[in-house]
Amino acid sequence: MFKKRPRAAALPTKREPAYWRERLFKNSFTYQGERVEVRNWSVKIQLLGKRKTFPLSSRHRAQAAEEACQIYLTLLEHGWEAIHLSHAKHGASSRVAAGAQISPASIPFDGAYWRHRLILRKYPEPLQPSAESEFSIRIEHARTSQYFPLGTSDENEAAVRAKRIYRMVVNKGWDRANERFPRELSLALRWQDNPLAWTYTTIHTRRISGPAKPVADRPGQPPERSVGFIEPDAGIRFALAACANSQEGYRCDAAFTGAGQALREIPRRRVDLVLANHDLPGETGVACFEELHRVRPGLVVLPYSVFRDTDQLFQSTPGGAAVYMLKRTAPNRLFEPIASLTRTLTHEQIALHVRQYFRQLSAMLPSGPPFWKLAKLTPREQEVLALLSKGDLVKEIAGTLGISYWTVQDYVKSILEKLKVHSRMEAVIKYLQR
Image 1 (tube, rainbow, N blue to C red):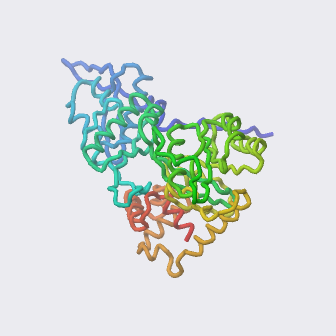
Image 2: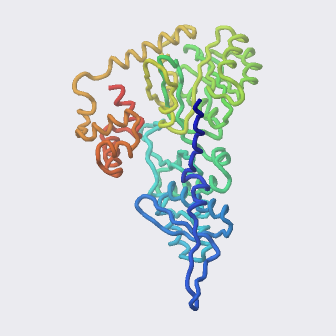
Image 3: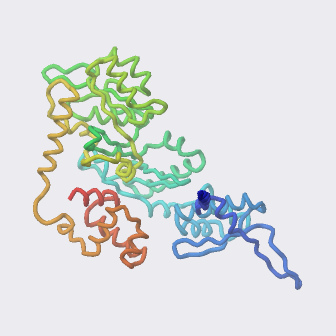
């Protein structure tokens, strides 16, 4: 009888202090003919072709490992420039200060740092076509990233606001920053999951709701459909209300923080359509939908999901669907697939119009050469895109094609520019829908 070999314990990664604990060392020097060992620990970190020794502030191995790990994560998130900026600001100082300077909480990123990282995002589309594009920023900290709209087209002011957001994230945490500042999120309306048919848009959370349409129906005009939302996040609730109120024929009449409140109040309200967050905390969305149908037979309830960005949206689509159809819409066209529906809303009518909507989109696909030829992708770029579509990582593609990691990165950048997309996942989706 053979015994199973015990599975080897997973080795710690570079993102864990345990990895750095085994890589700490103490420098030494010679004084009056004797070798003297420095009390504090040091660590060597190599990343992106650069290598540097960092003296650490702690004499205790566990704390020094935490500090080394934090330095590595800072380099990973912000690059070597963060250290250069820090030393340019404060100068090379004591060992204690040298370690402390690397912590994200103490890096004094200046205006130039943030101006270099400003982004002009295409989405969401401005309500006025003539409005200037406003800057956004991608803040990274503690292995989490988030896009924030900055509400200005002035570079200097945008840099100041970006720095203010970053300091809030570092000093007060992500939750506080997300409450204090508008966020840029991707929202997917899940019309059906198999075959998958979603429309998605980009929203900016709000601290207060925008101007609402009158609740009373206006004489001489068709009655507007009354929409309710079940969303625990106040900023998202106000953003959804603004989306509904900006689309012709719809208005937001109710917004609830959870399923319990919705179940109590919806039977007493005239609501034609309810949109509910698919991931209600502490409650299963399916149970919530079933209970709503029980208290209001015939009520149409549609789920939606919220993501930090479109990459996360594409990666989170449920597996197993026979067909994947995703279409971006403008925030003021949230209900575009059912815009032509004039009858009373039912699940059957919505399903019919959604099928027709995506069928029409398919019919609009151009015939002729494949899109990558129209985009003038080179044969090598086509190879890289094909490997990306299979889920290969950049380093795996480099190994397959026998080229360097950085060469693959250059090809990916060129592909995104030629296809006029913002991420690898969007390029892959476009490739798979060819």
